[in-house]
Length: 302
Image (cartoon, rainbow, N blue to C red; front, side, top):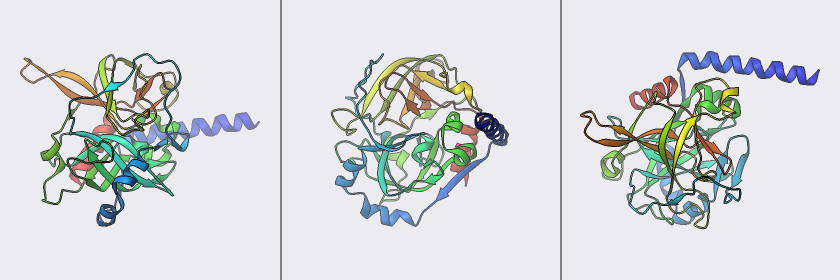
């Protein structure tokens, strides 16, 4: 009887998620009053400490550990500077933590893209957000940009656990720097691609755990496929998975894929996914579909 009751509750919750998915709505937390307090809070030492922890979907808030299981594609250092990719720091309950994130192109030039569980997890919003582009070893060479509001899909906001794993993405509207300049004018920006093909090749970028304790940027090249066996169990568009070993520490980091330019004579890198979860052998990203498009539009225009 208990098993039947659980199954009934499970399917009712999935139907509720599907209904919300069709609405294409979003949820946000606005905290412009936290900006000033966050400036004093995020010292280099706190940044280093926060880089040792990240929230995990369904696993609470844990210290990151290096993957020890066999891997398919090993991550390697990123030697060229990537100003539009960095670490997103935040406070979550009694903890401090961090994820990876990237600056994407919008007219305001102020939006940073990351995973939904970095912004809200198990019903609790993160707070005191700060993005450090090109972060390395406690330093923020391009300055610090503070969250004024952060956005996730309504489906993720209502569940923020494995039931809504196909909607694990979020956006942060950042403050301008001390000179009134938006982040995109300083770091550059990546375009983003919606409704992309799931089968292709990408390189996943972020700050995974390892010998550097998440202090340096790493990347991994991999083919991509449609979803994993868990994506099909839950409502929403099936995501993508890649065979990389950058799980635990690189959540929210961009998946960069090559797309033809408008003139068809060259290729450009676009973000078409963000790291959501992994096993040490594979990594997954939610699919950028209708709810993702609505999320970016709302973050940019409200």
